[in-house]
Length: 390
Image 1 (cartoon, helix red, strand yellow):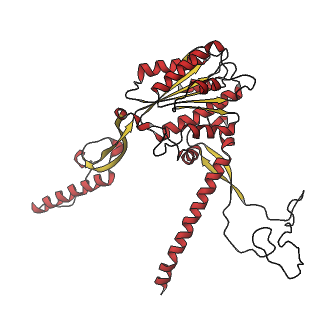
Image 2 (image 1 turned 90 degrees about the vertical axis):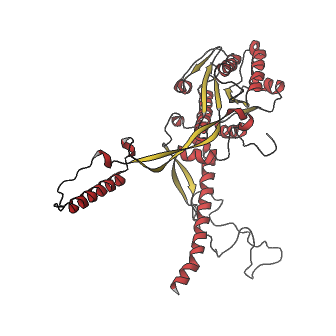
C-alpha cells in the first residue's frame, strides 16, 4: 500500500517542481530585463571575464492560498450590513496609500547573484545574425565538440586513462603469475612496477558541423563630438554585440575600426579604451570597412555584417561620400546597421539623410537616446528571421 501511495504522489510533486522552476525562470528573466539598463551602465563590465558576478533584485515565489477578509478587487461578498448603492469590497487596505509607516506585509524580495555569462544566456536566446544562410558557398566544416571513443596505447599525459592503465598492469601481473605457476616456480611477486606497455590513453573523436563564414566589422566614431557619455554608450553597445557573436558563433572574424576625420583598424583593447578628439568624417570609417572587406573577406564566400555607432554629427562636405559608402556596404553586406547615440536635436543628423537615401532592406538605423534603449537597439538589429520574410 505504501508503494502505491508513493507512486501516486510522485507525479504531483514532480508537476509542482516543474511549475516552480518555470515561474522562477520567468522571474529571473523579468528581473534581468528590468535591471538591464543598470547592468549595462556599469562601465566596469567592459573587458571583464564571463565569470564576473552582478547582483539583481528579484521577487520571491509565493504559494497560492486562500485569503479571508475584505477584497479590493475581483469578486467580493457582503456581510449583511450593506444598503442599496453601497460598493462591496471598495474599502482601502489599511496602510495603503498613506505616507509614513504602514502596517501591511511588505513584498518579499531577495538579491540574485548571477554571472555576466548567465545574463547573456537569457538575453541572446532569441537573437541571431540575420540572413546567415544567404551564401551557401560560405559553409565550412568546423569542430563543434569532442568525446571519448575508446583507448589507445599512445597519447599525451592529460589524456592518460588511469583506471584503464591500472587494469592493464593487473592483467600483466596475473599473466606473469600463471606463467610462473606453469613452470612450478614461486608465484609471490614483491614488486611489480608500471611499464610503458601498461599505459592507456583516451582516444578522442572529433565531431564536426557545418557553419557559415561570418565577418563582423565594428565601426565607432571617437571624434570630439562624442563625449564620455556617448562613447560609453557606444562601447557598451559593441561590448554586448561582441560577446553575443563569440557566444553563438564559432567561425567568426571580427575587425575593429575607430575614426575621427581619418580611420584606423585597431585591436580590441584599443577599440574599447582609446580616447580621441577632433573632427568627423563618417565616410572615413565606412570606407575603411570597405577596404578591409575587399582585402580579407570576399563577399562571394563570407557573410558580412557591418555595425556603426556615432552621434550623427558630420561635416556637410562629407555627407555625399558617406551616403555613397553606406550604399556600397549595403550592396556587399548581409546587414549594415547604424545606431545613433544621443543625437543633437538642433540639426539634422546623418541618420535622417541615410534613411532618406537608402531603401535597401538590409539597412537598419536606430536612435539610442538613453542607456536603457541599448538593448532594444540590439534586438532590432539582431531579430530572428521569420519564415517567409527578412
